[in-house]
Image 1 (cartoon, one colour):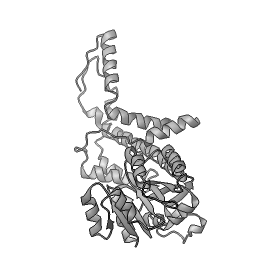
Image 2 (tube, rainbow, N blue to C red):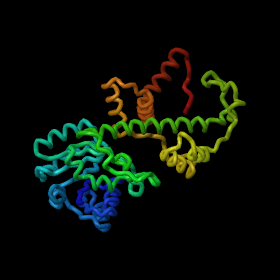
Image 3 (cartoon, rainbow, N blue to C red):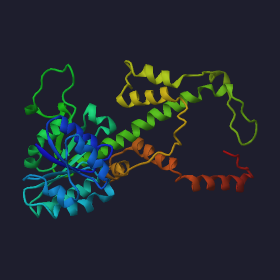
Image 4 (cartoon, rainbow, N blue to C red):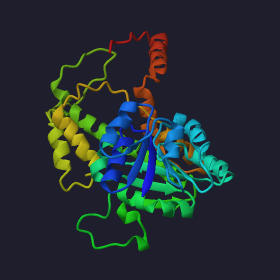
Length: 335
């Protein structure tokens, strides 16, 4: 079937490629003309403006947006100016689920359908497929099923034959509920992602410190002593540990696979500075937890740790040093 894709960044462009490989017709648009031209060479139909993009879509039009959450609403407004009742807008970015609820209500008054698709797969989705968490009206979601089926990974290799008649989740995509439900599920997915990443990072960091007993340690009032250095004499190969965990361990995962590859390539991770961004989903997950009274201590700690990595704890840390100096004359040691 035909689908329009606007936003040809790291995920959008590869989603187009996967759809083209699956026999779909893709109309593409991006403010970066080079990104459009590259996909035209691979068989897509290029568009030069929002109006041209919508104009090249056959009725009922289906326009999929893969854009940053901060601009998605504004671009939706531009797209629907050229649409007609029966057309569908799909938001596959990491937008706030509340925006999806509001957009759906607004578009419904114009006879348009709004489908929110939480999309997971990153830069590997072209080959592995994308896990899709979908919210929206039944008719629109059913119309888009061929697109979802192509983008999704499909059933597990070697698994018994399955049919979408009994549910699409085993194929890697799921209609989670009305508009907003898809982004809600993806929001929590990303909140969990923060926690899992933090667990791997903290655990491997403890392994890195396992040779602390071999290192010189200042003997002064500002340095906590290592009381039993004989128990911390291990020079552990972090890359090899991550690799062995990949094989049969209960904590094995694709995320661990990627971690092992990173440590194998550079065990000191020298090209990274340690500033970990958060794009919003972790914050929204915690807000939902607070609103509904659901405890989420692991996810909240993982999010706050990201804030610290971004330098947001710097003033608080300075204040701690100031207080220690004020009450005890403790002189701050250099980093």
